[in-house]
Image 1 (cartoon, rainbow, N blue to C red):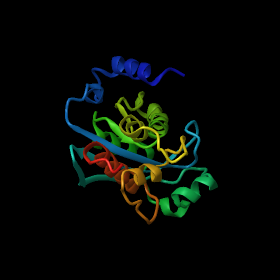
Image 2 (image 1 turned 180 degrees about the vertical axis):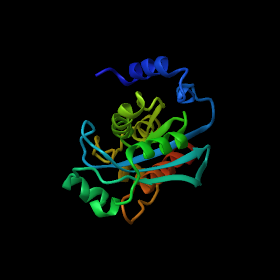
Image 3 (image 1 turned 60 degrees about the vertical axis):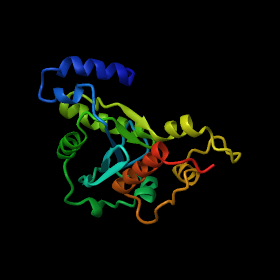
Length: 206
């Protein structure tokens, strides 16, 4: 499989004059989009998207009044292990959008802004696989990984668990409470956005 950067370059060449050409332009604004997907399983090579949540960030502001919260129609197969995480049953997805509708709404919301996430490359890989048969390209957006930003600004957690970069650990190090309640794509995207703003603009607590 080609590296993502090379695939984007090839897609840009093929679609530079097409209806989706604006997606391939370099972004010059001050926003990014925190995005999260709930999927049918944990394998990006076969996972289907069940729900998509996204919220825009502008400097220190999280624009919750303009957010994306999509539910897709149920796929043929859903992994029981993933069900424990996202708690989306087949009946919860009845009446959901088709993949094509969800992809179009997501692209319209995100535009060419960079995409922020936690394990963001997983979400991008799943979305790419859903998009390519429909549009002939994957997401061309820049990717911003919350855990990598945490490492670059704070270093490894100093609690003896060098590999512990769970979202809960990052939140604790930033002095932020972990929200309780149902695990959804939108709530996860919003939580990552809150941690990002705290990480980039807040004072260190240690």
